[in-house]
Length: 391
Ligand code: GLN
Image 1 (spheres, rainbow, N blue to C red):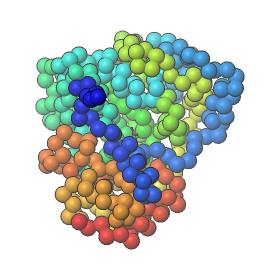
Image 2: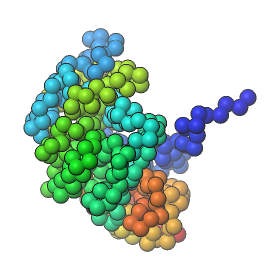
Image 3: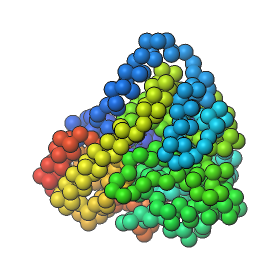
């Protein structure tokens, strides 16, 4: 019997992260593909989750999240950014930021609505825009500096535009949008009366003097911005899948309405644990960002020594190289050959573009994760240095 898939998923293969992690497992390569740390989050956080499990926090949490976590999220936004939120109406807990993205797009986008999205894009954005029946209008952050061009942003907006989907610090480029770029987004959003949905999961993972500024703090933006984040990156628990959406009650209600039909409610014992971590302050994320900056430098130095021209990221888990100079027409070909050539796995950024062959686009770009222990990064760098990476 033949069971064809529904049209909405036909042609959607496994995500590049699943494909590349499977490739790493199959070949025993060092996995610098999928972005997840190889050390645990703080022991107090793990202990708090164990205690919650033992104390019986094992039945459905309220759909919008347990009060302790919603309160902690509101306090976090006030402490870091001076944002005031009503935890009962302006905060919803989601199953990772991925569900917040799904909820935002399903809850806010009608069929035919256009969504302006930064490109390269995290792969769940186009998938969920499609599920919602929306039309994506990418604005490319062009290599090598990956800056947002305000004129291109303006040109992507039409009478059908419903929202701008932002992501800063940006995966995969590692850019942290600066004041000028954020002001340009705000100007366009206000002028065209658009909603901004902003994925800020790497908010605490910035380097050197780069600082994350939530676009909702710009004048005129709080009332039109839905901010998404999660505990996974800041507290090194990517498998916990506890995220949140915050902002105007109406936008949060749209996410909540969609969320109730997706997961209904998110991991009950993990929520009080994350609440305690948020309230415990910033020691863990601050130390993590410091560590990651060292790993970044270690990887960037190693990639360059292996002959790969590398862009220095301002935040996130990821560095980007251009493999075109080594004779590769496609980063995908490079990444599929890499386990055998060098025993390393990386992610081809070409899958994050609508038109990877356009000027400044990503056909030749490859993303490397450095959220790994120093000895793992050192091992990868040694393997790359010993390999012939030319086409
Ligand atoms: N956000 C992580 C990355 O970009 C993991 C993504 C995933 O596995 N879906 O690598």
